Image (cartoon, rainbow, N blue to C red; front, side, top):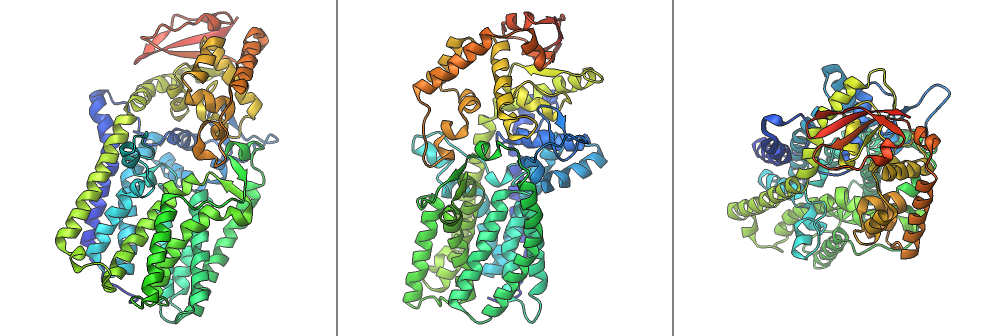
Length: 597
């Protein structure tokens, strides 16, 4: 392949526009549903986004890097907080928070704007990468739609699970999850293009792209774990295949990778220092497992193995020259999924590897498929008509329809939560007004509201599902907060038992037993919760509720109670320890001021 390719950017801008429209779909769907009542909430496409927006809002409001928006605790002089995943991966939120503070934007406004910006920039970056690796702008444009829209098809999620009779997962466009991997995803894709440029550069022209790739890896290191580890794994694959094959110019390739690695190392050292100060419960919370078992049956791995086998056969038949740089580049992309899913054989550690499939390997395999499409055509392995206008048109239509279906599916699935969150904006704004000079903790009964309130209001909440991902509280405190939430919500022992055994409530299971005991996705050696363990937890809550006293009630001093206006909520346990005012209705909720008796 030539060093410079004539890029027809009109095709790139066309696919960027298409992806921008798909990215805006969930937000437009919420706007249509709310009409003039829309209060400014962003339409979320992933349940973890509420935690990211809460942390971003805390930075916009001037809180320090180490803060906990759910408990309201900040790092103070003489009282340092341990590092959390949010404070370690600080590059994306600061990139967003600094201009937001200058422009007076909220995290919700930033998240709304981020979706189309990331969609367009990712499409353009992918188009550039595929153009320089396939030397065909039309194929690159179609390939961009394939890569952006079909990742859940490759990972056997989304619509595929529906066809198999299972509940769909990752049904939208995973790379758009805000603010990670979204903000840095175009840069992750750019690493592939910069390394390719460096490999094919003449004279000393390889130095600049190699350095640029290294700086991007540094941003990824302080941006998102799964992106930077995947980038490093791929660089190792490139170095390995070039050392084994030793094609023309292999020394320059190794020099290029060495430059990128040396620059990246400058970021890795301080990253490891921050990581050493992480909160004590982080490893357990993130389900960091000790294992050396093989992991070879994930969909993206099986596709990689199939394509690698095809490359090997074609090379043996001399239909492809295995020492060609384009073949080696393709091989490195296909090797990367095998490395990231099996690195534990060497390291002995595995950290929620399904995130690689969701955010990394599915996209990389699709990129490899597009590159292989052109290579196999040149080798006359696939017929010429596959590059015809008609074939490319229908592949584009299929990709767009699949992407539109994904956008529609997530918009409908998340609508209930998004409506609650939008109605909570007015509640949060009112609490911001009431909270000036008034300390204390909020008790939102609706847990969806409890998750959303820290993005809007300044006050901490008693308990929320994502409270455990921050470092402001330790596991024992979080459990006690959860017990208090159950107690004030009027949950009896039989209610808790019913939620655990019959309803198998996801939130309750996660709160009491952790993600790794609730969902087999988080742990390969999944160990479901036993009936005995459930009975023990129910008994612990029963003991806690029976011993509840005024001192316990005042430990996390409540200032406001927020309940749905239309629900008949049993406030007897709250009234036993707190005095309530007449309440103030905001949207579909009533805000009660509380004072400890």
